[in-house]
Image (cartoon, rainbow, N blue to C red):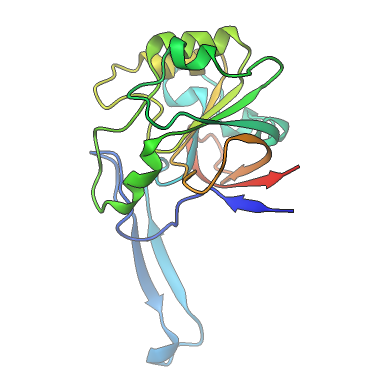
Length: 207
């Protein structure tokens, strides 16, 4: 059974959204210095790398990580190959076989951006109309292969539309090696009590 790790490596130098905390890893104890073990201090923002956004990220009374059922983060997922699209709108989504699907991941040209050392503002994103369309189709989890589902110039409307309908958002994926198709998603975010977001390890398994 083939598996794909679609998480980005959690390492210093990982691009972050402008204004978010940088990922820092500091070695506190080192074997080479005579310490009895290796221990590191890791500092990062809750939207670092591959991460899950919950409704509390944008909504005052939105649900937090405590309220997201694990059943939503495990199960059948459709990976759509939308490379070549400048933006993901209704026209791009209408051609996808979304009937009966609850989970959807977008493979775009964004996956190539992870090779750049700095944040890239010109990534492909979902439009506001596209977000409304996904809600109308019953999608409950949507993911994309860069740091935000919404464009760099967005005003939060995409997030508010999705999160306001309890659609969780999985951002910061690397789908560069994943062919379009149906898989089993295994996505486990850190269990941060009351958290609005959290880094996650996300894996796809072929059925």
